[in-house]
Length: 183
Image (cartoon, rainbow, N blue to C red):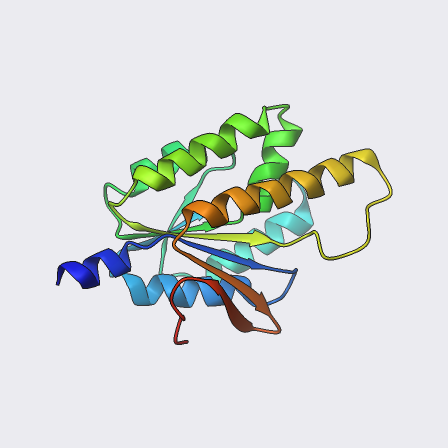
């Protein structure tokens, strides 16, 4: 039983492009890993189109996940959610990075805090979802290049501390690190 419990507490990073199927894959992982999953959403609905997206996502997971919205203080939200839930799905890290940048927060300490939290946190499995934005052309402006670079370095740091890392394309997961998902 202890080995199964340890396997279930393995933290996971799920990467992929826009509309790659990464969130659906992460949701399947989370639902198989525990009985009390929580969806920690980082999106901020700042316009009508984003509000429609948020509402659509909430409706699609109704009854399967409790939802907590936390756009910036991710480490604290994970610690708090772990008090009542056995699986925490964080969607998505690139929106979290955007929120930090827009608020003029220093990203490096926030990423370091998240990594430190994950290395010590074993009360629940954490499944992190993020957009891989570094596969395309070099962006044509400084802000976009900064964002791309921050996302890439954040993904590298999290891949070091997560037990399992997947890349999803066309709805198909590729195991990059750890155990095969079997989904």
